[in-house]
Image (tube, one colour):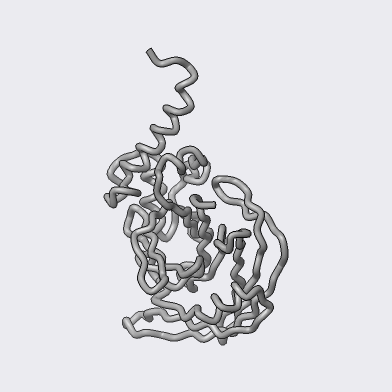
Length: 229
């Protein structure tokens, strides 16, 4: 017979199992059951998210640890959508993370370089200068290049001038708690667009949280690292 002291652990196992069933680790498509978490995963690519419980509110450090695999939380504030994403591979230093419904992002040392499956995706971005400046500690002015597909499937290029500055010590608030970091701000401007990216870097040099511009059709993406030191 199971005693009362086993109940918290059983809850963690149940949540981890639910995530596994969603295809977070197995690669199955979301939307085939699994309750509110499945619904949250399935709506990241939607133009607008339906009302429902927040995925963030259902995440606990214990449940994430039970997955025993790297996961991140991605959110699109302008769409009110969020999803868990798992690491699926890397190429030339760019890591790809995918959600259960096939939306994926590509990042290099935490800096966004491409998205897929969102509609109005960032086809690619030249971020080498941003990466060098960010990890050198700023302040620095750099050039950022973004590429998108237009309505006729032609590649359009946007060049932006960006100033990277060190904002100082700041707490990165994530779904699994707050972390002491140093925050860097990147203010960018181009012919028809201005935006600001933010990066929260931990003492180990890893980006714990970022808020980055994707494009005019998507808006901003927030990425939170849920695993690792």
